[in-house]
Figure (tube, rainbow, N blue to C red):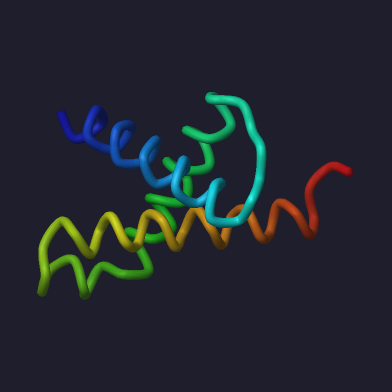
Length: 78
């Protein structure tokens, strides 16, 4: 069940992050960015997750996906 939740939250976070950073990607890339961003954000914002609950995890997922997009734009394929 946590894997399904990770995919759903990651997909939503990837969608919001790609739109916020004006990046056009396909569905698989959007979900992958969101899931990886969710993992990064989850690790970075673990403390907030404990204090404020799942909403902090979602915010962390969006921020992690945005960080990953910024790194992709800088160092990814051209």
